[in-house]
Image (tube, rainbow, N blue to C red; front, side, top):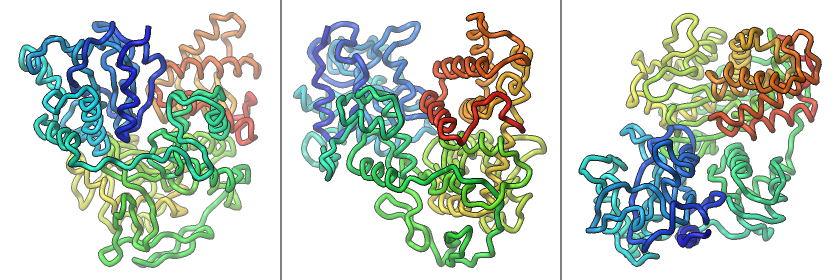
Length: 585
């Protein structure tokens, strides 16, 4: 049965908003809606990580409340996810403007937010909230007074607290849009200069197949969640806003990437320490120019949502309350330009780390917009979420120990130091001898100056080497974990298998033993593979890899399928071996 709210995506798109239609939404609902009289605003109380991590819950519901839990979900990037065209279980008991039939009379919007005061609403999300509510109210011929918060509707009073923001200014903003006092946002062009349409979730057809082929995802002609995830990943890698909508800018970037593809198959090797750099000056490093130092006379600036180096070069883009860039040098590309392998690392280890890095960032990658304040480099080491410690301080302490002069040039001159206890893998940053151990203190790291300092350091040969060595050290942290009576590196002895485990360990380190154990149980239940890895063949390990990837897909690991696919591609191009025994520490 198709329910009545099928007008929702069209109304939102006409308002210039990003819309993603969830599979099956037209026939999803508890029953038919009554007459839509208004909108109830909610927040999800979901994870701080990801754009719309609560989407599956909103679709399926909880053990105590059947789904759908809203007609619309609103992601942190301003994308509306259309979940249901029928009635949803979102209101509960309550009343607003004399109406007490909440689920039958009000459309529910669940906006992604942790519900904590520390979780600042991104401007793009709040703007979309205003415009989306205004578009719906205009369609149902209601004014801003018919928009309320769940906390305002719910009875008894105080039963609900969402959303935390004040509704009076929210309604004022909605009314301003309804009254035409706010300019409509610029629409993404429907086609590009080559007549290729702008694609988004829900689109189907031959152009979608073409895009899927170029992105390397399953080709089925349907722009679903997997294609959207890979589109976002591509956009991150090319410093575009990762909204998953493939418009003219994304098509142009894809054309350029296809034309300028660089082979990653060249050999690997050492580095030189960069010569001293004076503020405002640039010097040659690895055949390129090391960006100039930033100081009082040579400032970082922000213009038109772009972060500019002291020499005017764009090094990052503004996103939410911080900055991001995926970097311009992959680990593979840097290694390909070296004359010899960095000492102390086996070829196997380098290949494993290199393959895993296709899922993270470049050597100069920076993210200062999410809940971890600052993430850096090929493994996106963080300063730590909220008040927690992070791995970034440990990376910097290793850099300082290995290359004190380079550390002083990159960070010491700005009075940045670390506090890391012996044998610990997390620590704190110190700025002018003050601990960055509160949300307010860590917020300093969101400033464009720090984004630039870390981006610049990512060009330094010594810091690149430290990143590689620190990343490689992570392998030793899991290969001797005992699972089902044997160490991880007894079950997986191929470079491919170890790379997959490393991928999960970076993304969800605590999950590795459980995921592998579940995969082994699944494998042994088929009664094809013996339980002693010492007598295993390549076929046995291949079956375990298949089972492991399948089990991993069912966990909360981010983009597990796409990440496994990219690592698998490395085996097909010869960058990674899937032969049993090919991994040597």
